[in-house]
Structures are given as structure tokens and as C-alpha cells.
Amino acid sequence: MTNGTSPVIQVQDVSRWFGSVVSVSEISFDIYPGITGLLGPNGAGKTTLLRMITGLAAVSDGSVSVMGENPRQNSEIYSRIGVMSEHETVYQFMKGRDFVKMMANLRGVTDIDAATAKAIDLVDLAAAANRPMGTYSRGMRQRMRLAATIVHEPDILLLDEPLNGADPRQRVHFQRLLKQLADEGKTVVISSHILEEVEQLADTVLLVVNGKLAASGDFHAIRAALNERPYHVKIVSDSPRELASELVKLESVDAVNVDPDGALIVLSRNVRDVQMEVPRTAQAKNIRIRRVDPLDDSLESVFGYLVD
Amino acid sequence: MLSVYRLSLRQLSGKWRMLITILLILMPITMSVIQTLVDDGPPDDEFVAVVFGGMLIGSILPIIVLAISSAAFANEIEDRTLANLVLSPIARWKIIIPKLLASITIAAPFLAISAVVASSLSFESDTEAVIAVTVGTLVGVLVYSSVFLWAGLMSTRAIGFGLLYVFLWEGLFSGMVSGIRFLSIRHYATAIVHGMDERQFGQGDTMSLATSVGAAAAVFVIFVLLSIRRLRRMDVP
Image (cartoon, rainbow over all chains, first blue to last red; front, side, top):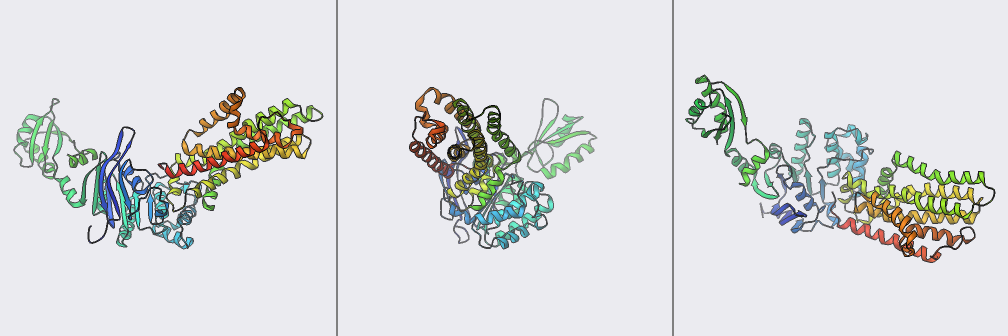
């Protein structure tokens, strides 16, 4: 229980494997109304997890409950859920408006025309609604797909990488819309592999790495943990040993090693200070720095740190 | 259901699919035109067996239906749009039936035209013969549609499996082992043609009209039910 409300989605010891490959391993969490970010690098198992929550894929072990019901083989539940998959394929020949209308009809909306117009207005795509979706840009397709996802005003929205292909303006619009839906009391789950994307939207984060739940809870605590992680920087200079002897004196530097090529590998937990002090130190000693490469910038490295 | 039916009609009536279908249905008509120009009187047994049994019912009918029915789901699975339909609060049979009806709606008129025109030319507008060939062909459309719709749900390689069934199982093996003919849609269709007009098509078949109609109906229903079961249980991409 959180804030006196019951979880809308409950995932209990869920695993999913394909042959000998384990895609999701014994994950448990509860999701409450508001925006929850499902964060993790590509291939972490986010999509499989979302597919199991929507009932599109079966669980190999464990259980999923959405509003107290098993979503698998339970089509009635889709009148209260809106799902936007990561795949951007649309019916190329179909006009955007007709697509949203069709989805409204399939989901049992009574006033189809009004609901369609409202959903299309919400994604700010009324001007292009009468064009075939084959002529849309990637961002427009995503927005029209979102309109189709919300046309029946579902209580739960499950969105897999919804900001893919959106330009900055569309991104802001998208984020504002999702926040508005969350303020109306809806449960929004948004998956992404981009840290900043989730940071701007979600207060609660589920971090999935290698099919396991690496961290969950308040986003800001997770972000703080990420900022304090040890960071490796490779520095190529014309006088590595002299630079190394100066850098170890700095408070922001934890360790300095010289690799076989003569480059320095600097370990620090305070990247901001290192960024300022290394050039200053080199300049003071008249040492020329040829190259600086961060070694821990990949998402896998960032997420891997939290798992370890 | 109407939404899914309309969507499926549009998806299945692609330009290339229609063009190939038209070219294929012209083949038996062309053969009949040539036969009427060359011969006076009704066609011999060999012509009937080759053009109506082998070409129309044995090859063109299953190929056209395979190309249309297997695509009803296979294409949606391949381009991952099936989730749009499945993530709706409607029973699975309300997706299967409109897709099946759309496949039949597209395939049946083309094949009926081919059957009517070719048999009218060859049998000099003998109504009984024309009706027999047309009904046999349409029964084939129904049963093949049901089977190949299911195949499209089972595999993205449904076309390959369908061709193996048509040409190896029905074409080759059923000619070698007579028992296999009881598990052959082509045989049900030809048995119906023979049963409806023994005068023109003889009695050479090993199945009665009633048996072949019953078998065709059973296969049709069984594969519709299998498709509904499959759509309920499968992981939708």
C-alpha cells in the first residue's frame, strides 16, 4: 500500500524464458496511480515485462495482476487499459482519423466521433488527421498511435518507448500530456532506455537490467546513487608520468594508473571537479593533453553500476 | 466485427496480389477457349481431369487461397499490427471470423468467375456441369481458407507449408496412397464436382457426395476452432 491506495498492477515473482534464454527473472513490484518509469538498457527485458503485464505474452513463472485480474486471455480488461507497443508500424493506407476511429469502435466507445476528435486534439494532430498514416513522420505516427491508445480513456496506460522519433517540441507536448493524464488519477507506465527521459516524467522508477529488477522506488535516490558512482577517464598527454604525479594530489581523484600505451586511467567519484581540475593542472605544469575519453559512459555501464 | 472485416479486406486486396490472382484465374479460361476453338463438342476426360481437376481445383484454387488467407494473420504478425486488434475488449472469434470472411470475400468471386467461364465454354453452357464445377470450387475456397488462415497464425512460413501440403501431400502422395485422399481438400472439392454431375464428370471418385460435403464441413469448422484457440493462447508480437 502507498498513500492509502491499492496497487493497480501487481507483478509477483515473474519470470519469462525463451528456450534456455532467461529474459525476465523473478521480478516483483507493485505499481500505483501516477507515472512509473520502467528504465533499463536495450535488451534488459522491459518490453517482455510490459508484454506480460498487458497479457500479450504468457509468464513462464509467477503471476501478474492488473486491477485484480489476470490480463492473460481476459480481453474484457482492455476496455480499461491502453497499450502502445514499441513497434511503430501502422496501417500505411489508413488515414489517422480512421485508425483512431477504428480503435474507438473496437474498444466499445459509444460516441466514436467525439472521442476520436478529442483524442486527436490531445496529441495536437488534427491538421494531419485526414492524411494516410504512410505519409506521416515517425513522430506523427507515434502521436497518432498515442491518440488511438487513449481514445477510450483507459485507467491504465502502458507505453513502450513512446518518445521514440519525437522531436523536442513533440517530446515536451508528449510529456505534458502524460503528466496531465497522471494528474487525472490514471496509472501511466512508460518504458525507456533514456535516463533523462524518465527523469523528466516519472517520480517512481523500476530499473531493469539483465532481466532483473536492479532498483525501484524514488527516482531522485537512484539518480543520486548514479552521480556518486566511480568514474574512469582515459587521458592521453605528452607527459603521462608527470601528469599522473600531479593528479594523485587532487582531492577529486581516487586513483591514477598508467596503461601499457602510456595513457592515464583516472578513477574519480567526483567527475565535475575532475573536469575542471585536470586541464588546470596540465596547464600549470605546461603538459599538453591530447585526448580525454570517459570510459563509463555507456548505459550498460551506468545501469551495471547499480546492479553491482 | 465490421471494423476488422473492412480492415482485412483492405489489407488483403493489395495490387500485386490482385494482379497475380487475375493472371492465375485466366489460365483455365484460356485453356477452355483453346479447347473450344480446336475441338467440336464436349471435352474429353483427359482435358476435364487436367484443366478442372488438376489446374483449377488442384493448383490455382489452393495457390490463390493460400496467398490471401495465410496473409490475413501472417502479415499482421510480421509487421506487428496484430496487437491493435488483440488489445481490444472483443472475443477472439470476433477477430477470426471477419478475417476469414474477408479472405473468402476476396478469393471466392475470382475463382467463381474462372470456374463459371471456363466450364461454360468447355461444356457449352451445360448448366449442371457449370454448377458442379462452381460449387466444387467454392467449397474448396471455404475449406482451404479455414486451413490456411490457421496456418498463417501458426507460422510466418505458412506459404511454404501450404505449398508443401498442396503439391506434395495432395498432388503427389494422394495419387500414390489412396487413403491420403480422405485427408485432402482437393479431393473433397473434386468429389463434390463428380457427385453433382456424374454425367459429365463420371463416378471415378472414391468418396460420395454426402461424405465429401460432410468432410469439407468438418475440416472447415475444426480449423476455425483451431484458429480461435491459437489466437487465444499465442504470444502476440
